[in-house]
Length: 213
Length: 292
Image (cartoon, rainbow over all chains, first blue to last red; front, top):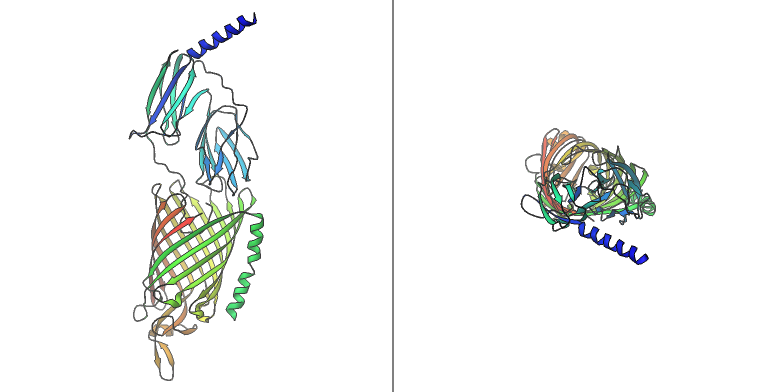
């Protein structure tokens, strides 16, 4: 009886695995160059898939007075810590509607663990070093990935169905298209985005002395 | 002797720096090197007194930061400068001194205005020892980003200088504004203007007159009743004299970023002092500044 149950479970899992489609997303700019740090995500508005945040917190570090990674996609309910690996203090904050918080000056491990409990885009900053910026994209779908330096992201484990594919980048906003995923889907979607100028606060010094800005 | 006492007074501030080091964050450090050309280093009226000079300058500073509350910081540090004048060695100098400042950011984020008030002191030693001095300044600063690309900085300063030769001592107050425009990730344009009022020192070619000794050729110098001093800084004898007068200065600069820690800086500044006569000084400098 136990063997039968195990065989049924194995068959079911194999079927499920075979039923999962994969979508590769290649994001490029108008010049055809790959775009890194874009978040590609698929959702079915008619039947949203449930998300389960990871048990362990995600880390966004501060090193050499920069956040790393620059873009962090997570699902709703994910805990995030902000370890400061610099030898100077940072003051991490967000005033974004999706998550407002502030972690006053600290060095070393994050004093607080922040739970991102609403979907949306959260812009992070440091109140000491104005050039420091990073983004947390809080998603309500489990199907997402971030593009690497080659501009490619792979979203796998997609059950068959109709999806809305969207790609977001800090300098491009969101672009998207509808697509159908079948049991054997293994497609590459090419998304072109128009990148706006990277108008971050300038870090390079002016004629003044050592300073924080 | 007076200069020595002044240096000792400036050094007395160093324990404060050490204390700040003990409990603060940092250091933030920077170094810069520049070459500057002045068309009127003597700050003379048009005529025999106008001399130009080329100066190489290097600066370095260290700053520690301590939070007093969420948005208020105490900073303490030291700054040093070395000047090498390739034209007149008497203008070679080194200086160093402590800095103390309280900064408050009114709000959160890059667009929150930043205000600061502080004290600066410097002891400067010149090859021409009469110019060696100690100065103490109270400074205030307001900085506001108007958007991602534009930043307005307003500076106010009150400074008193005590030098070995009385003519180089004095005081002034100044108020200036700088508008920085980050055109793109690389290029920054700056325009600035400032008003200054207080003591200025002008130097003019001198001649020896029987019974009177050395006197300035510029008769306008006689309009001032302040101290005068024969100086041998230049290739010929000059008379330095002090006057109180307002100075307006304006200028522009361009500063391309070389990476995220380093910038090149090219600046032009024109200073115009209106007193009994007009003193105009044009400065052009090119340099590099690096934040570690």
